[in-house]
Image (tube, rainbow, N blue to C red; front, side):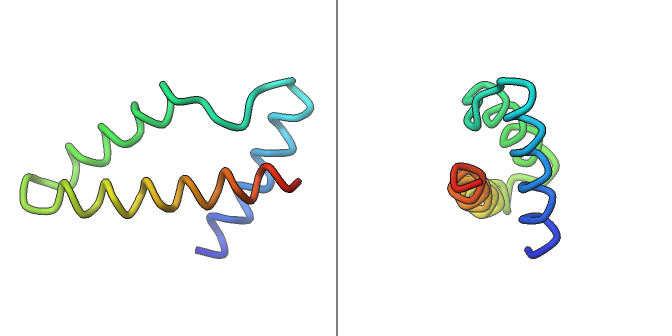
Length: 65
């Protein structure tokens, strides 16, 4: 988790210098779809929910930077 948040900080700094938005709904959906496919049918719902929350926390952190 800590490593992900560190990467999230680095990405936020990059996004600011590039003038990019913190939230890209299409990109997030693309990543969540890939995660769901990799998780298998039995875990798809749970892994998607977990990653959606991680992404939400990452965005929240990025917005404070």
